[in-house]
Length: 196
Image 1 (cartoon, rainbow, N blue to C red):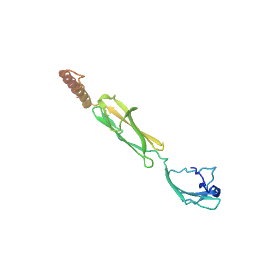
Image 2: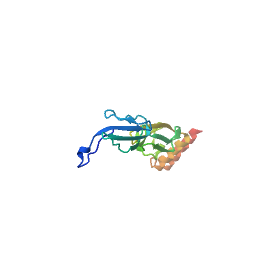
Image 3: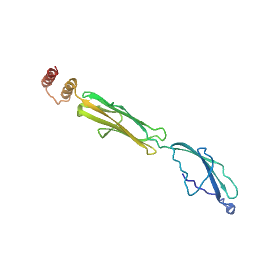
Image 4: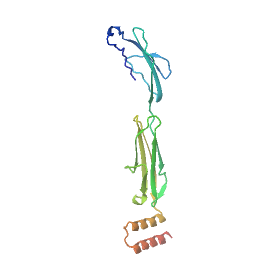
């Protein structure tokens, strides 16, 4: 952080300006120090800070103390995936993608979720009927106003069971993929016999 030092010139009294003699500053109640124009004030810790400063001119006039309060955010947002959980989901289930991001210091600037690499909204429902069996991944990422970024992911598996396979046949019929009811019933009966 750098400070700009100016001894103001009053119109009509230009000869009375003496120039800045020195500036002193106190960062976070660590005591006043002389400010060096060639060296910026280094602040490396994140969090809230208070800088108090004043200047004196060569004529011995001190300006009133100035106070500047600011926050340095070095903490990435907290990103959480509430759903799906890392477990097996039966192919006939609807799977909700639910993720959130919070940032205490500077607030969330950008947030996004993805299902198998494709962007989705945070309240997206996955119809597992249309997805391949096996492992899938949901990711969520966020960036805060200060530019800190974080991401998290969870993986889950879509599996088939005898009951979900029967449900798949029923859904295929409802969608018109199987057009004859007797064909659907025959497939379901064959599945039930195979299960036994």
